[in-house]
Image (cartoon, rainbow, N blue to C red; front, top):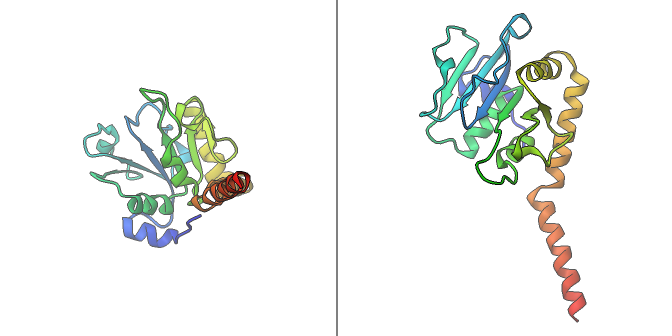
Length: 191
């Protein structure tokens, strides 16, 4: 689990301090699943993060609460900074060209305490349950975002706790301990 100061992260990234921020991060276009920005999401900043060559139509928006950041290379440290600065992350990674295992980006995000929203039918997130919030379409995504970041603090807290439990259970340290126990058993059986 990696917790950092949200204010310092926002300062480094030159993001507003007084608004909720939702980070949208994915490999392909964002427009098909972005929630409608209406009165309920009026004071929520949509921070869209993508590679420089990706077509992000929202970069032409006149809405001051749609912020587009294009990163040529996104290091683990820089991605963490974005995660620490935000109140929620939408990780729209839908289907793989080949058989998918999991999204390593999701594992990185789960340890930061930032609620994670993922597509319900995505190949990448089948192994996750209570530690992420799944959506089927943009309306359900919008509803989930409103509930978690604006209305239901208790549900937000439970989602974060589940994510921390998952991150701790599958941490490198715990996996290494399991291997040590396994190897010790195998050595004792061979004697």
